[in-house]
Length: 417
Image (cartoon, rainbow, N blue to C red; front, side):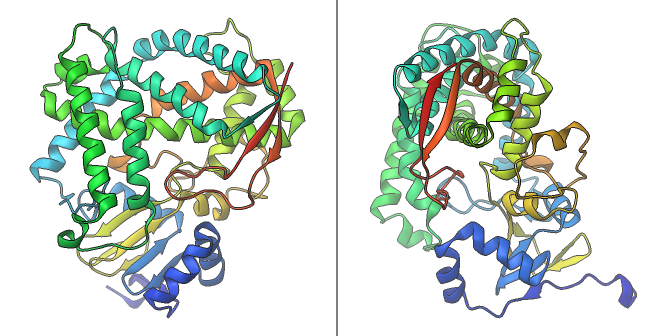
């Protein structure tokens, strides 16, 4: 290998781990963005922690997940193998393939009418008030019920949705903490034990639902793919957590953007045709794409280098924690001119290259629920903007990044059209 083709090492900041934690906790998004602007696209934030922001390198890392770059933690940050060929990893990937197959166009289209009706009821409740404090919470309830209905068909979902919310709330302190305790210590932490208890309660409720009368839904597709009851429960827990908050966050950010850009909101409202069914107007698709660009709910992706690796012409030390932030990539990729501005019409002709736009991730661990999420975003947002006008009455300057990227302390003003 010649000198010209040798992978470049990450730029080192020289910051200690304690120093990084101090800077990072003040403003996580701002710190990551400033690190790229100051040091370049691949930065060793501190020894053993590498921020990858070069689109080619980002694509390389995510494309090689399960082989060279591993998912080594579960929802509670318990250590897992993550290597292809490991029985747990292979079972997980089989479940993901079954979920993707179960989210077929006919199944999604059959779900659309129910979702539109439920969103109409939400509109009626909001229209009766002059403002909505914490719209994310109400949209979470809608998305949780949507996921439960799509999964369980005619079965009674019972308390699966609220118990999913309980687990997510119990997990938040673990997910948001920058500190990693050894397993021997972690299992004695009260917050860890609360998350274990919440997950057991959710799993018990899911088993009860699966054993009850009824048919249809995603769980039938999982059974047809050969997943047993316990594997199905594991997939429902993981995907239920993702479906609980992520769509709600995405819709809320779009409402914030449209509240600040009333001309775009009027264009979206005029384009919505209640009888169009699965056809989403271009301006609405562009608005969703631009909202996901500026405020991707999954703002941070983590991988672990499986030995010394290279990606996109950059070297990564063995065992390094690799951080990829779609929030930062979407603000620095050259394809996005005027990147801080909300400009939906850019998507009329924009075609980002691999690694430049990743609201749902890419590679073998991309968001398997994308089809359902797309349906929810288009249906819910179309219904809301067609019936209501929004203003931002209050929102903190810095978003909430403890788990999903959320507006902090948001209150929306609401007026009927």
